[in-house]
Image (tube, rainbow, N blue to C red; front, side, top):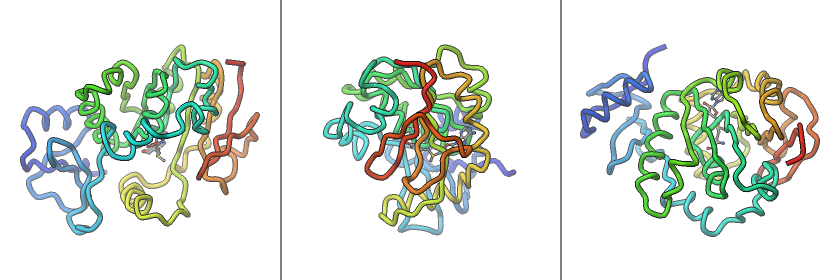
Length: 249
Ligand SMILES: C[S@@+](CC[C@H](N)C(=O)[O-])C[C@H]1O[C@@H](n2cnc3c(N)ncnc32)[C@H](O)[C@@H]1O
């Protein structure tokens, strides 16, 4: 497989070198198709032929993530209830399929310490850049303490991490939602990440590691992960959170 491209245009040289080294990216002056680019001091995912697609980036400090932190349901959010944050706010959580870090950010903003595991180099680089910018934002002073990125496979993290109370899993699932935002990001994720066909294999090691519980996010219409029925499910606005309890929180 070819290394994902990072456009050198306007990108500070030191930062470019560190991104290439950390995530196995290849610097290019003439990127074609999906590539990472530098826009307004942020790393963005862009397609050379899809002008209308718009840039994709991780932005914890403003936009939807910030709105959800300030005006969302807080501890009443389904994800918070499913993970057990209503019972203990400083849980140690392994988000083994971190993606763009939206769910991890909600959990960390409520008090959890979250290790974000992402295997895809493009997504991991976007996430790392979002964490860098978020950590430099005054009102997110807690971010670098509570959110740590680990660019590796979930299986590796699940067998090597220690002292994790909750494992959170949200593997890719074919979308049915037609909203513009979902379509835009889903198209990019479909092209860049593909399907997580190995997701079923994560449940057993997750149950082995989690001291308290494993939470699996699924579309409301989807089967259980690994066809294994959970202890209970918490229903959110667009998703279901299947909770596999190992011990009480
Ligand atoms: C649906 S997205 C997660 C979205 C995320 N919950 C959020 O809030 O932004 C799934 C992500 O998990 C990653 N992933 C899937 N299987 C993985 C594995 N075995 N190891 C590491 N990352 C994995 C994919 O690369 C993808 O970025």
